[in-house]
Length: 535
Image (cartoon, rainbow, N blue to C red; front, top):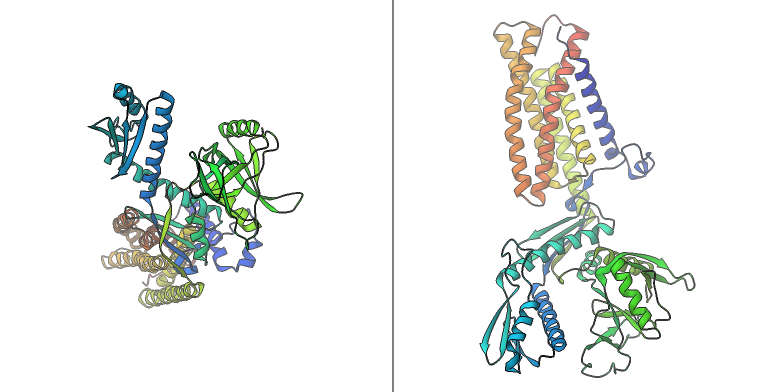
């Protein structure tokens, strides 16, 4: 009689049992899943935005604001450099993204030219234009130097900003505890964000709309915050109020940043042990801790402003030097707002402001309807295919249906184990996979029939049918698998969901048709020992 090696039996049994264990939580209520021991599979498959509802945002990256900030930084560097060198100069109006500076002492033009070249770094980290200057410098005459951002540098900045923005958005959303968000580039300056399970797009928009650029700056205590023009080297900012019903007023801070927010290594929400008020605890890296210690040591009894996105959160008076590299941000925080601020600080600052272009919320009711429709489609497809196989192949059709059921179980188990997200197109991929799984059994059974017609005996026909059909099944599955890989690589969103379900289904259907069905048939032959094969 036909035999299957003991190792093949063990391997098949282990795969089937593991598949059932991983897929079982999907059939259990959430309350029951919560009671499953942690050492056992207890996670259900993640549902996409179209199945469980959630929030959808299309964001635009404000590159022009970044370009203006770069120009302001260049102006500040030139002013500080010329002042240190004692070179008399004045700035001319900025036009067409060009910084113009005029040296009023002709004898020092060469010195000024050398200084500007020093302040204009090369694009050493760019494969696009290695060694080129960030700004193209020209001299129209009369002691004027023009510095205009080069096209290569502008292209480099746009690419870096998009990559960094997507990464910061991802970290912020992950910190909110959501599962399987979709964050991807859309065009040259847009980011598409889909967060399943989050029904409030306003909360998401508020979280992503803040650049979260935190700085620590000294307060100009002699300046009048009500003045229309701030003193040189200072700026007038809004002050956050301790009472939401009362405006916070204005405060004048020095433009010089004493400690930058990117020196923060950790931030967490906590509570003041004396007042019970929600606060944000923060910690600097080694460089930031040294800077923080220096500024607090040198400015005791002076106000030190903590600024977030050009708004002063708090401006306490420094009572003593803070040497530990950590501190506390106090303000009119609730536990939620303190936690949100901590999330923003941990995720880092956005390199450019994000402007919402489109937002919508997909209701859970629509997702429930989609799940119900998908369940009906899956059950209907499974039932019709099972009925056809029984009518066409009798007992062997039952064997094929058993393998088909295991195929669906293994497919769900694989998607669950790898944390894939199931979407409505993914359900379509599962339904398509069921037809493909049965197709493999049809090839095997028709090959067995053909061998019988050619005069082979029962055992020889079964053995030859499985052996010869296997090559055809492999060829067919490989072409489908290649197509699914191409869809996954080139597609986005729903297309990827369909490709994942299809690709995994191809692998599981091959396993069930070649291993499981053959094992079932051979076990039946060894147990029943029929005298005649009816198929």
